[in-house]
Amino acid sequence: MSIYDLAIIGGGPGGLTAGIYGSRAKLNTVIFEKAIPGGQAYTTRELVNYPAFPGGTTGPDLTQKMQEHAREFGTEIIKEEIVDLQIDDEIKILVTGKGNEYKVKTIILAPGAEPRLLNIQGEQEFKGNGVSYCATCDAEFYEDQTVVVVGNGDAAIEEAIYLAKFAQKVIVIVIHDQGIVDCNKFSAERAFNNSKIEFVWNSVLSKINGKDEVSGAVIKNLKTGELSVLSCEGVFIYIGIVPRTDFLKGKIKLDEKGYIITNEKMETSAAGVYAIGDARAKYLRQVVTAANDGAIAAVSAERYILEEEAFKEQIQNANQTVVLAFWSPLSEVSINKLVLLDKLILERKCNMKLVKVDISRNQRIASKYNVEKIPAIFLLDNKGQITQDWSEELIENLKLPK
Image (cartoon, rainbow, N blue to C red; front, side, top):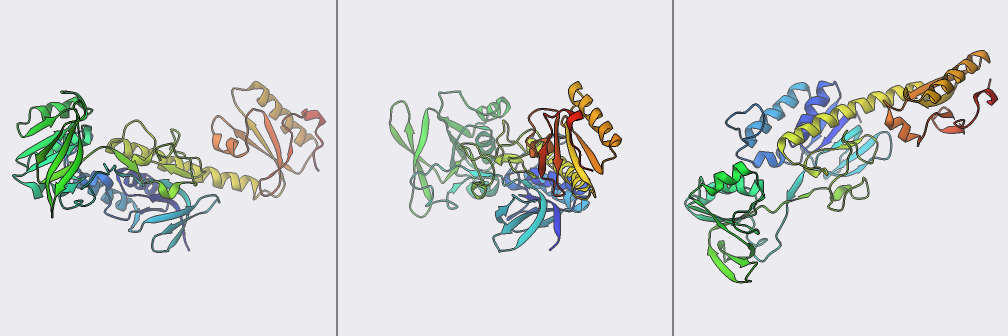
């Protein structure tokens, strides 16, 4: 079984960007995507704020170009779903729904998110037959009809504007007082000025009516408690997203909402595993920020592999005793101690190799050895395990092996 340098779980904008950067760095890179590459962005008809596309572009067009770009650099795309992973060892294992296993050195998690459900009567019954979460996918089925949109964030309002190109009337149900929406001002102004879009304020969707297909929506006014029925043929729900991270529970650290916790390098709690895009705990979830995440994660993965291979070469392939010393150019004490140690090894002609690690440039190796303060000096065996801790010892008192 061949070993991939980099495996990306999820082929959305973040995953495709990571593929571009990974393959460009000459990493043997693979993307696992169970559906059509592009993720949620693929279902977005209008993208008006992605850089370099004045006048806008479409989700399918942008993500198709990203896919072509990744393939051009050599990224392999496999249409399989990853259902389990083993990430504790140096070589990690990915398991697909088909039972196939893949060995990888590093992983970028880009599983994305899915629409949050209202869990009201009629939602599941009419899903795909009047209830939708994707205007791009289904807007054309409601030409000259009336549809209801639930939500008032960027996705809800922008999709309402798109639906207005097809539907006769678009009714937006908003939980806030009149005039207050959570979307960006530009989209809000466009919606308010669109004659085909109406707003119902201080309200929530309580029930979806219908027999074989949707015929109406029951709306509850939050201030009066009054129920009213709006006649409509379709209901589009945009009340947020839920990260697709169930398969990661117990594997890496997630926040209370299930989003993956990372640092600025996209590193997760597991060594060699990174996370990007909508499934990551972050401030803004947009196509452009997913692409940003993907670029950072791929570069981090590349450096991880280089550091691991270099460290392994220095430690495990050394034909002599290894002394691992952590220092910092900002710590004069650590510099002086390493100078003395280096001098002592030379004077006593010990068969020892001194490996110096600057923690200001390699926090990951420092973290691996639980280094909290410097200087930290360890005697290692040929497997890289600590046999003695010399951190607090005076250099002149050390009993160095010959």
